[in-house]
Amino acid sequence: MVSVPLPGAEASWVSGRREDEILQDLYEMGDTENYVPYPQPGGLIEWAASNSGDSFYWRTSPAEPDAWPVVVRGANGDWSEFPVGAVEFLAGVYGRTIDVPGMPRNFPSDHPQVLGLSDRID
Image (cartoon, rainbow, N blue to C red; front, side, top):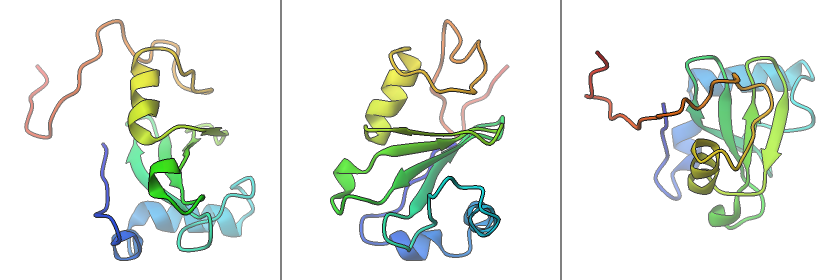
């Protein structure tokens, strides 16, 4: 699932989300490899999650949102950072030019599909 805040509304979008509470807990336990939750400077904002438990974040540094890199926390607890934006990251993963450590070997499949929330999978 991919979700995004409106520009300038990041703080209100982040507050109260369960995923961000989990990130805060991981941070307090020292399990974030020095990444910090938003709204701390350079903090992480989650924008997607996989059905397998992987989380996809923007690292809010540098100041220009178009330059925010993607950070992935795999379901296995590994962290990886990619110096690209979300769209380039997704295109690279699905085009198999970006390899995300810890993702299943068969991801993406040979014929991936992008589905809307109302699309049915039969």
